[in-house]
View 1 (tube, helix red, strand yellow):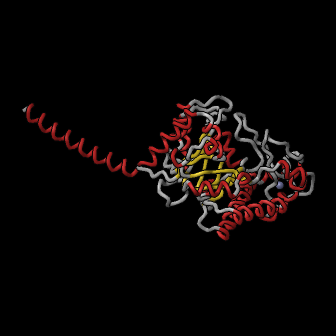
View 2 (tube, protein in one colour):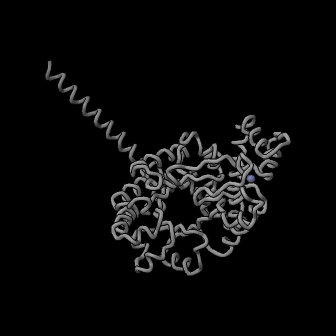
View 3 (cartoon, helix red, strand yellow):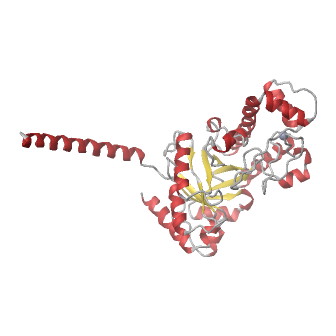
Amino acid sequence: MPRIADKHLKKAGFLMQLVLLLFLFDFSSLMAQKVEIRGIYGNPKPFWDQEISLRELGVNAVFVHSGAIDQQMIAQVRSEGLMIFAEFATLNGKNYVEDHPEAWAVNDKGHRVEAATWFMGVCPTEPGFRKYRMTQLQKLLDAYDLDGVWMDYVHWHAQFEDPQPILPETCFNDYCLEKFSRDTGVVIPRGTTEQKAHFILSNHNDTWRHWRCQVIIEWAREFKEVLRQKKPEALLGLFHCPWQDDEFDHAIRRVLGLDFDRLAEVIDVFSPMVYHGRMERSSQWVADNVAWYGQRLSVSGDAEPRPRLWPIVQAYNDPHIISSEEFRTVLKGGLSGGASGVMMFTSYAVAEDPKKVAVMKEVYRGLAAE
Ligand SMILES: [Zn+2]
């Protein structure tokens, strides 16, 4: 009897294993991700100066500040068969507000905001500034053959890239107060700017937060419309704060004004800036956080359905030296959670360190061969 029972158990065990294997096989094929972007962020020049071909390193895309782009760069990028995406500084503008004080953001005390370390958020509803940026965007698309534009610094005045973030209440200048009132129907009593801000935050806090997110969405929608007119196949990306919803008392929506649910209707590709060193997080945090974003944005490894997730990780030695091992961890971590692309900050930080170049080549060529 025991022998027969044993035999049955063995058979059952074998079947269980088979089912498990089939399940794992199916599961792994579902999880198989197509990595479409093996990117660098920054000018490719430091590689070219060393006569290193980006193609040879497995790179297939370059993300570069719009102001650094010229025809020679475009020609060289194209000669290597690479894609090129322009980073576009959107709401950061210290020089702009100094020349155009009417666009200076105002806090809940009625004062012009101070720069949040190096970031100076311009009032996003001041019409002159908006026109200025949209004209810049149109000129950029007229001048260069780009695969996409990545909106950067898209949030209300704040600083999230430092370990201790700066999260002020803005913007209560007349442009914002008027537009808020017009858009929402909230009647703001007469008084000082501080009194008006107090009235809004005390009585219409939810409406205010929602409206601020809407202002950011409107910027994204207008960018999308310019792209549609100038280059319909170009992608609209967003470099953004990598916090999860509940961090810093929900500051990503409450203060920065980012509503991912609504942004996902406009943005083609989300690029959370998972700078673990700058933010004093572990290198493992990158994979965990990108996985969270994969869930949050319901991304797919495939091109459809949108949106896609192409994080940007840190290679740059600040405030501590990022070792090549650490760089490997964050570069691979950037591809967790259904992300279908990755890039690093910055091209210079990699090019100056032969060990980091070797890591990038190993990871990217491995992905290219898959
Ligand atoms: Zn304003």
